[in-house]
Image (cartoon, rainbow, N blue to C red; front, side, top):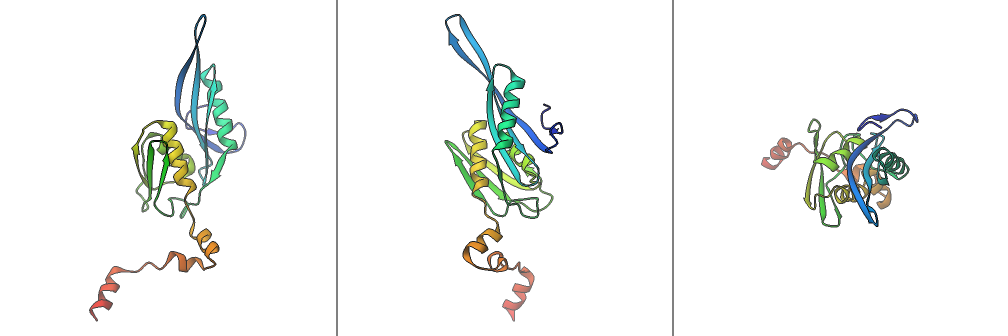
Length: 184
């Protein structure tokens, strides 16, 4: 499979990205046996994303295993206007900590390596992120998924509280009108 290309042979219209490949070895009597571990992120670019790792003796087989597993273990993430997250959130895994912030239209994906792959396959167009602590791709992807799993949509919050969505979101006020009313 091509890196970062749409997978059209199954007709499921999913995007998959290879985040990293590790060569691992096992020491046996005759020497070393090498294998490969691949970390893959898959998503439909419409709010669903998943990740997985696969191990095999050859690189293509490891990528295929990881891709198939990532497609099975996808989560749905609520997006605002289909382009950014609803609110700021922090995710943790091990020594990794990631901060995910919503951004205005036109900002783009401001994220490093593994997190960028997650947001591209998720379908987010505008987001600002910061990673702290461990830069291990596995931990960064897991911390990003922890943050995404903690996201809540205003509709979900309103239904849980028994309120209307407009009362949860609030109204956007113009700062110039607020100043004028304060002076009067």
